[in-house]
Amino acid sequence: MRNFFMNKHILVTGGAGFIGSHVTDLLIQRGYRVTVFDNESTGRRADVNPNATFVHGDVRDETALEAVFKTGIDAVIHIAGQASIRLSFMHPEADLNVNTLGTINILKQCIAHKVGRLLFASSMTIYGTPQIAPTPETAYPAPVSYYGVTKYAAERYAHITATRKDLDFDFHVTSFRMFNVYGERQSLTNAYQGVFAIFMGNVLRGEPINIHSDGEQSRDFVHVSDVARAWVDAIDNPQTYGEVINIGTGRPISVNRLCDMVLEAFGYSRETYIVNHHPAQPGDIRVSSADITKARTLLGWQPTIAFEDGMKETINWAKKVMQKA
Ligand SMILES: NC(=O)c1ccc[n+]([C@@H]2O[C@H](COP(=O)([O-])OP(=O)(O)OC[C@H]3O[C@@H](n4cnc5c(N)ncnc54)[C@H](O)[C@@H]3O)[C@@H](O)[C@H]2O)c1
Image (tube, rainbow, N blue to C red):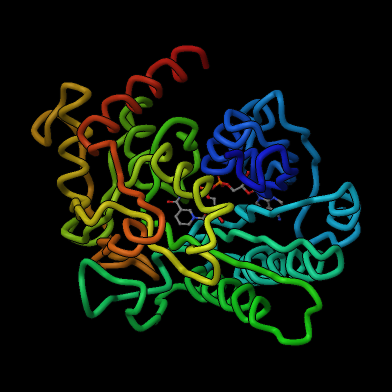
């Protein structure tokens, strides 16, 4: 039986970015019609699937959003966002405007055009320093970065909107609290987001690797193809309606270990490569590991790519990108 959303028109905000472009590819592969809305601030039009319609626009611009919603949207995958913890401290107003007010703009359009389905890109940063690891969705949210606050606020705006009794249509929201997503198309030159891609870019350019704090802070790396599958599988799965769902692996890897793995994959070690330590940065998280029981139960989802394999595959891709550059 074909599902209800098949052949439907999906709006992917941020679809020129790392995660959004992979979600778009999978949607197209599964037969959806896709419009990508992206301001190309960090995303690249070249990464947008040629079978998707591309609209250059900003989620802060209500007129531009209105025009795209008028084309008839069945579901929104809202991935556009300012994705850097560091930049949230450097430019707090921009972070708030894009992540929180941008999401409010999307919600207003969903209401105005009675779009009944929204999936939102939330983040593990909302947990801050979790009391429990692996961390379940029920953990107390206590973000320690401005970014974590703006993401959490946006997530709450979305879910509270879905419970509004004054709406005259069914509005179903799902949020994914993604952990550290990695894989092909993650920027190798953006020093502000994606620790694995930053380290890869450093080694490919022969630059020292910079570790903040003692390096024993952990991250939970999940491959972008596994992440994209969770998003697309959730679109028409009623069990995910109203839910926030962790997407990670539950396998924490320390930043020191990550550094050693990357160096080894390039044929180096700490004896042969410069690794500098710096003080911790604002908003740094010490422990990060996802409890993914809910994703398994509601979505039948689980990660399929071990970090050791995904890392090698991503490094091979990065080497090719650098050769072409
Ligand atoms: N990468 C991760 O590990 C991770 C983890 C948790 C949450 N997230 C969230 O997932 C989303 C995607 O992250 P990513 O890693 O793919 O980053 P990315 O920077 O590659 O993607 C963000 C996309 O949004 C677009 N964008 C930014 N501001 C915009 C605006 N004002 N209007 C329209 N488009 C805009 C960018 O051009 C880009 O294409 C972000 O919202 C991020 O906060 C990412």
